[in-house]
Each structure stands twice: as structure tokens, then as C-alpha cells.
Amino acid sequence: TLPLFFQDQGRVFVHAGLRPYLPLDQQRDEDLLWIREDFTEHSWKAPEHAGIVFGHTPTHHLPGGIPGRVWRWHNRAGIDTGAGFGGPVTFWNPDTGEAWPSTGDPYQVAALPAGAQDPGD
Image (cartoon, rainbow, N blue to C red; front, side, top):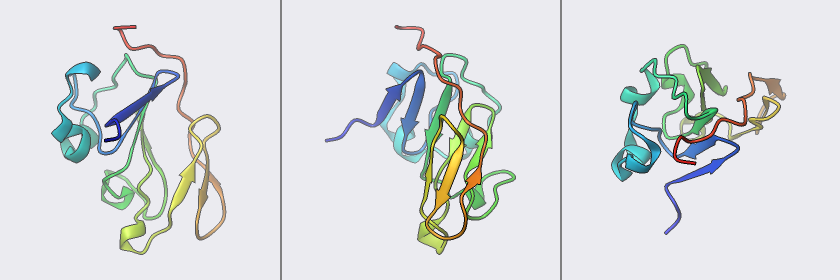
């Protein structure tokens, strides 16, 4: 019964990702929950959003991803650091870029900008 995405300060927080070039209000539930490569490997920069924070795909499965670390590319941040595969659960602050894994020391990742607006606003 929860919403499939949350928008705050122009950022979108979603389980799996977004279908490139499709406006937020036209995204399919299936993609919000299950999309992978069509989102994570596409160079689309989603200019209407300051950033997209997602999970679903462990970061060690993403292009250039490092096991157990938050992944950043363009305006995307992958935060599934592989707890289901023995990696840590990680809290990441998109404003400061600070990451705190459940195992190991905190580290810095590029922050996501705030302030972009959806064109429908």
C-alpha cells in the first residue's frame, strides 16, 4: 500500500529505477519495482530530476560497481550494497555524500544535487 516512489527536493527515491525518457507520472509499476539494465546502463541524465536514488540491484552488479560500496553515475545513486550477498547494509546521505556501512568505516561518495523540479510542477 506504500507509494512506489517518493520525491523530495527534486530527487526521486525508488526501489529499482525509472524507464529512461518516460515522465515520472507515466512510469509503469513493473519498472519502478523491477527495472535493471535499461535504467542502470543507460546514459540518460533525467534533466527533470536532481537525482535518482535506488536499490534493487546490488552495487557489485552495476557497471564499475565496487562490492559493498554506494554506486554513483550521472544523477543516479545505487544504495543496495549487497546485504543479501553478505555485504553491508549502508546508510547514505544524498545531501552530504557520507556513507555509513554496517561493517567497516564510513566513507565519502559524491552527493546528489537538490533543487531540480519535475516539469509538471
